[in-house]
Amino acid sequence: MKVNIYNAEVELIGNKNYHNIHPDKMLNKWVNRPKAIRVAPPMKNALEIQTGNNIRIDKEPIQSIGYAWAAGNDVYHCPQNTAILSHPFYNSNGWSITPTNFLKSMTVVGVRRLVKKTWINERDQFYIPDETAEGFRQFQHDCIVYSIFNGQNYTSSLPNIEYGGKTYDIKNQFTWFPKDLIANHQFSSMALSTSASRDIKERFVQKYIEKHMHEFSPQSLKVLTLARQLVDLTMKYRSSSDPKYHLTTRWDAGWYQIRMGILHDKNIKLDDVTASTYEEFKEEYKTLGNMLRAKVYEYKFLDEEYIVPSIEVG
Image (cartoon, rainbow, N blue to C red; front, side):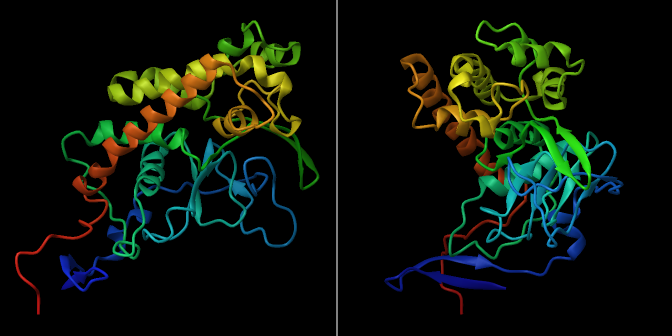
């Protein structure tokens, strides 16, 4: 079905197509969801777990590295109802991220965060994309970078989390830098350096990026380089950060913890180099988003928002 679109002055600005799609073709059916087996603290946000009786999920697969929250399959829900966390989001409406579904999961999160909601597109449904299209694999890898440094990345590293009578140590598998950067840094506290040097495993995302470096676009690599520089430059400020962000003891603290605990803390005065590097990072991240946004439509995740008409319909 094709309908006319008019602006506030009742001027014809385009046509929009609507059509029925089988539920199996919806994007929320694209990612494999392994069975949740082990108990995991349900996250309320990046720093807190949910307590009480309204917990809908507190389990995850053995191989889980995080959780993708993606409530609803339309554009209307995607701006705020999309996030990644270190453990299940208490309200469910998502799936656990594992090594086998990682790339698709990051693609879904990236796509949902790339799209800007308007009155024209807010009820549009997301579809399973054309995976055979040229450049699709690189697009997926670029979505990893876009998702990691998005404001809805709530993955974190947290100590001594009490849940169900047990104490959990929540590791952040979404760090993008090697632990040696922290362990050997001149501004590392004894606790921070020890936590990094005694940890025998690099985190999943850092290892994935290192192995697949050739599959990212130059723009994504530029963002990653600046983000690693920010980790280095902000080390001197960790001792001044709010303890709730755990930046003085957790070497694998996530982007949320660094961003909110240092870069956005009004009580911390950044030096000129750190401040300018962060501004450069934000500009390059914005460029990456602009580069990827058009591809959401090119790869058929969404129908075209509207088509400029040659004639009025009806």
